[in-house]
Amino acid sequence: MIGHIVLFKFKNENKVQNMEKAKEMLLGLEDTIDVLEHIEVGINFDQAERAMDMSIYSLFENKENLNIYACHPAHLEVVDFIKSVTEYSKVCDYIV
Image 1 (cartoon, rainbow, N blue to C red):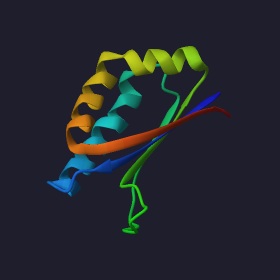
Image 2: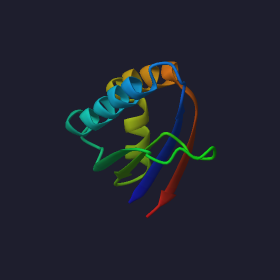
Image 3: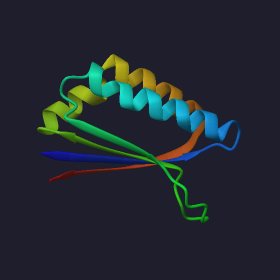
Image 4: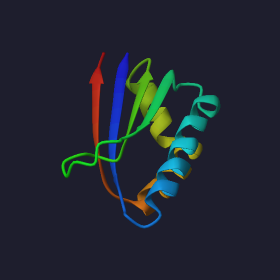
């Protein structure tokens, strides 16, 4: 299995609404993309300076399926929205 974690720092403008929309869009991918085995989306309640605003944790059977997910049109639509409302993101992919 492959674990895929992404952490996001959102822009301040409409931050709460944008995080909720991003969460809804990300969770919707589980019903749309067959190779996505599992996804969790968390909005951080910690307001420390070093804290990120949102995280996703997802699982894939293998690296090929992670790549299929990454290129899937439904995922790319979510990526476009998230890029427009975030300052930056960080990713970690690993073998579970």
